[in-house]
Length: 467
Picture (cartoon, rainbow, N blue to C red):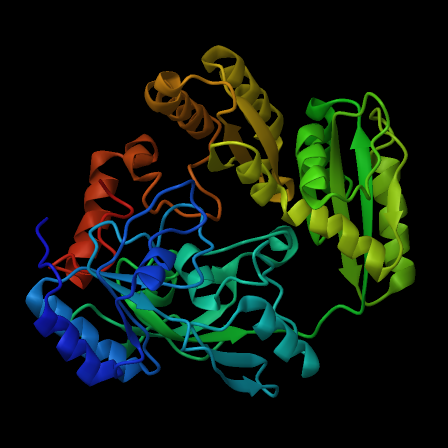
């Protein structure tokens, strides 16, 4: 695909829309928007624009569509699949100025927000009104809600509360030709036509630019209890996940962490709130929430009893807010810690929950076969295992030429278990060459035709999702 290079005349036109201050061409800003949290990729755009209104985005896209200029929407740049990398240069559409919460509707349990609002800021604003948005990505303190929509983000609470798509009612979007539309209705039920809202959620900015979002919300639980259970065997830790559910419990979070992930995170933080006894190889973090503390304590006791058949260590009970935050901090920095320790690649495999032991075993088997080490953790209540592949001593030629074979083998195995490539990070730039593993030619062609309907000139976030 050939795109028109940005010229002085284009920048002059952008300034008529955005003014001088919101059109950036200086090197520091271009480099800021040249990468995200995905490995070490750098693709520098030619210009950055910072809209404040939907109408400004409409004008920009209409112009770029007519002139065949590539446009890459960008949120906070916290993505892990290269979804906001400007592969073909062109324009980065930086959404950080569209950061207003427009309406909190307590009567109808809804919130309308712009796409550039930081997720945790949105959650806190709702808390002040006695409301709760439960989707809880690890990067919530910095990621934008619009980016969460683009990737269909999940997080630690997905096992009980679901992922972003389960909370979105309606979206205002701008099509690549500049047309503005809403995808659905602000109702809890909607069986009117195709579900365009669900189509846009998770489409990674390849079909349209999301500008406004209507989310449903609920009242928050008044209590939560968190425990940390060490296991002598990683296999048993994985097996124990289904045991919890088969015993009739439905925790709000259920996280698997292998020992190496705990060690690397605590070293990264220079803080050691978790002391694993000798011989312990993994742990589960289990949280229950609700409005009756006595019943929650009974649930925790029941979960501990259900897991008593496994070889476990001493259960750590986080009884106050500080203890809980200390444990969650260790869990949330694991990706950053892995990235800081070595050149790395992160996979976001997901399988039916009962298949987790097999998936984990295959990761370690491939590591021995191909010569890489790995750090594994994830949302095991959803069957979602984050696999951080670390280069460390692996020779450069094997990293470049052999590792892709190992990843492809891992994905084929994941599919054989009934799983797929990504649970919450998306496909973006780094996983697009593996899409043939999970979709046959017909399914891929249908998706490409959808892209063609929305974006016939392929100007919006090109180079993502498909080869």
